[in-house]
Length: 261
Length: 233
Image (cartoon, chains in turn purple, orange):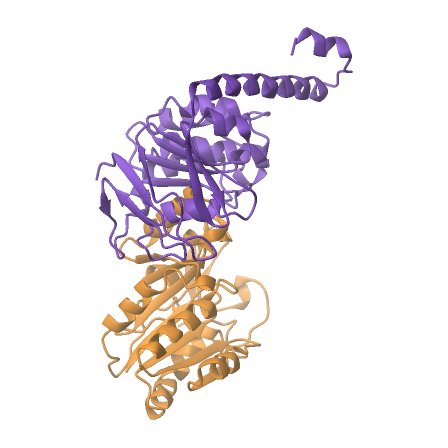
């Protein structure tokens, strides 16, 4: 089945009242963020999307694919599942080297040029991490950030899933704006659960959550894009100083003035 | 009566899966009973009896291997369950040496594997996996989606016709497909036969010879370099 569009139809919040956003649609290439304080139901919303909820989860939401509901007993072959979920896991438990794991996963997913895809995945991940991952590293030895980077790269390149859900990618110390930039090159639906203003404003739209319910859908306006670009600069300043500190350098005011913020 | 045999490495979640299955059987007004075969310690018979009020039993294999014990006592166990008026007998065993499997012809063999136990597990456990009908993968919530897919592949690589069910048994996710298969299982037939072939030879260790080294044993022996040879009549 080719997925062109998914629709989320609202249910109810924690107090049982109807959600204010009763419908929103995601088309291929759309990037949406889900924002709100901890405990407001952000993860529950992406879980509903992942499960193709059909008014059968506590929220009562319904997910449509290409305008059609997904039957209760419908199950995808897990290796062809159209949704990849990058949860907040920050460690692997698999006792395999990275290269071997990715090779098997690429085969499971029916990739034709396995070697090329595995290399592309590692390259993708290495643009997001500090220390580079190589094929020989054991999966279990990867750091939290390396793990998260590899999971994102694996979902996008090997999984090649049309819908990718990412739960708080900013937490693991990866280069988040770089991640967003790389992800935008792939024509997919991306849903970010995030506390990060830069990610939220760089998305096409954002869902505001409160008390388990979708309260508001805000479409990013051109002025917000300008603000997002400024926030990106601030992020880059922070990353620049992180690099200097990691390199063992002493920091002075002059360095800050040079960056002219 | 239908016989369902659950096997799997220690602490993989066999009992948690069985409890969820039994809960659904009872909800359908079916009559299950439960037997646990273990080596040294088990209290699942008491907890399951207390929770569901169904006939339960535990059997300590003691000096025997649990799978060996299973072969020797299963006819009596089946008789016990039939007398208790059960439609379904669940047997949980802690088979240990991985050379044989506890499954019987005309029963349902269920192997329970923990998703967190490493990608090589499916290759390590031999007939316990390859002769089973269903492989239930537990604790899926603890690993990433990519790892789930690779683990599933490794299971199917060892047992290509097996039905794979991914489950988070604590929350009862993935239990319904197991119940569906149980209901489709044929009734047990007598005499009962073990599925597959038992390991080769008479085990001199099982009969109590403690001396180390092939020269002290008889039957089918081997060297360190995998050369098999036979000593005896």
